[in-house]
Length: 488
Image (cartoon, rainbow, N blue to C red):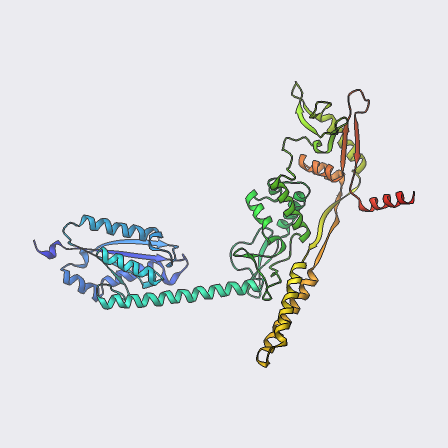
């Protein structure tokens, strides 16, 4: 048997595509290229030296789609399979009669960094695999071919770094201009296009849900409960509340995106909630996390946290009678009453007293305290002033430009500085009775709490066991009472 008859040739064809819509480097294009290359003179010359015909070549194809050339070889599914198959084939080749070649469309199909390509060629040398490309620029079977491969790999890496820097600069420019870069809009906003660029604007329907959830949370709600109101999962809602997104700002790599002055936050869109509401939300979340204001259990009766015992002044809890009837009961056992009895009485009093009143939506405004930023701007101005005093003609213009930018930044801070927190009431267009009828159990509890319900439960020996009062925080009323007391 001759040596030529013993030799086998295995051609490993590697095809890679970063994006499905990259037509110029499609899988079909790459496949056609290596099939045409097999009929070319260089490959045919090599086969002739081995005494093998094209029909005798065993072709094994490996395709990675949606995989970047910057990704390490072992982390590409089918490149990893290719390398494993080569190693297994070499172990089984006891006679050393198998010749192996790896073919790719162009250098960048293999790798886009010199270090990664050198790893591939070193692996090829260790396992008897020649590495080539269909444009014949690379063939590691010769010293010259290896040198050319390294140079071209270096150029490919340089090109990738240039593209990466260009993309990074583009993202930074878009952020500085308040433009939306890529991806889905955050909840509460939608993407609009103007001036051939993408921007964010408030989505009215989603924003209304966010505002309702925020106000419910501030009014002794929970993150989990308000997430259902908004229509998000609890983790999604929690992340949104912790981010600056709802104020129309953005974080990049963990830091707030600022304008060129390094002080003013870039406004990507109109805020959905006020600074005061955001502060109240953060405080509420802190209270819930530390146990300072734990939310009542779901099974807690409607009026429990607003009802107390006449004797010990302890809050009433839920419970059941021996027959399984829901009760309000004093923890010390002084008094009990059917939940239905107390709830019906409170409902009747609420509708009688408040039912015809107009419902108002109370939200917080202000709370945007920029004192620290203004102090920092003043300190920066002092430093620039000191440098200008000793600056020569060459640097004076630069310092004057810096000073003008700082003045503009300070003016913006001053205009946005609004530290006072204010409650603003907006009529909803319905009565409190309408609101009661439309509310679920948790909503009715919030309505009673907002109206300042106070219930005292007395023993059965008293004819009217329930004292029901409405105690609302009213600063103007408190001021009037104080003035009256002083007059007396």
